[in-house]
Length: 235
Figure (tube, rainbow, N blue to C red):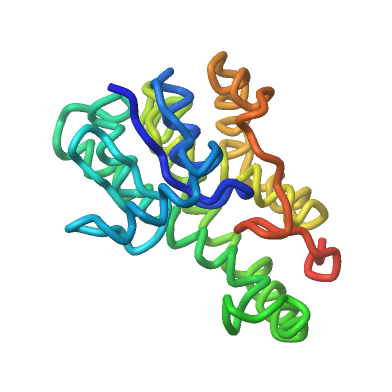
C-alpha cells in the first residue's frame, strides 16, 4: 500500500512523528502537501470527507482516513511492525505516545502560552514566565517519567528489547528540546542518561539515519512546535 500523509509542507510539527515511523518501516508514502497542488488536495480532503479530520496530520491508507498523530501511529504500529501484537503491550505503547502528546502541548505552550493566533512578540512576557516554570518543573517531570520507564523496561527501548513508534517519538521530542532550549537541556539531559542513550540509539538506526540526512527531513524553524528563542532558554 502507498500511504498518503497530509501535513503542512513547511514545518516538522506533529507530522514529523508520523514521518519517522514511515521512515523506520521503509513504507511507501507521499507527503502530499509538499507536492505540486498538494495544499489544495489537503484542503479538499478536509472539506469533502464524510468523517473529516479536525486538522493535519492525517493519513490516507486505502479507504481509511485517519487523523490525530497518536491514532495514526496506533494504526501504523500494528500494520508496520512498530508495536507488539499482544493487546496489553500495544495499549501500553499507545499510552506512552499519549503521554508524549501531553508533553508536546506543554512544549508548544512555552512560546504561545496565551493564544496560538497571537505572535510570540505579543506574549513575550507570559512566554518567559511559562518557560521558566516548564524548565524548572514540567520538563523534569516528563523526562523523569520516561527515564523511569526505560529503567523498568530492562532493555534499551521503552518496551524492552523491541523498538516501537513511541521510541521514535521520544527521539523527536529530545531532538526538539535540544533545538528549543540548548542551554537548559545540557544540564537537564545529563540527569536523564537513559533518555539520551535512546535518542542516540534511534538516530543511529540505518533507516532513520538515512531519513535524517535526506531532503525529506525539514529543518527546525520558528513556525513549528519546537522554537528557539534565546530569552526563553534559561540554562
